[in-house]
Image (tube, rainbow, N blue to C red; front, side, top):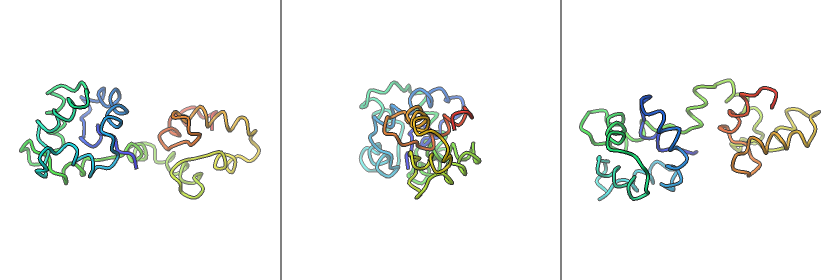
Length: 171
């Protein structure tokens, strides 16, 4: 399950633009979709909690332009007791994958995606689309898949499905 750093750190709506701008870059920069691994990468000295300095160093090391105010807001959102330290429990409490966030926002699309996903693979492929609409032209199905699959793997993730589902004529 993919987890993007902006959601893990619980960015507030005032930082929504950083979420949009940095989501893909942060995931790649931290090389981890696993919250345990990501926490360990950020936890300098293996203290069991994250500090402002941990996050600042993590962003700087990866050449990510996140300023001090943004980091302080991330910690404020995650730290439940207000001590400016983020434990792993606090870190995971605010963790939400992009799929979980979209499923919460678009429950009907999530249900439809799950129904189409033959074998519960976590993505849709040609066979899934064809099973849903057997009379559809194969070339048209492949066109939809290639349009939706932003990484070019011809597999449509739930995130990609949501993007094309906003255009009802596509599905």
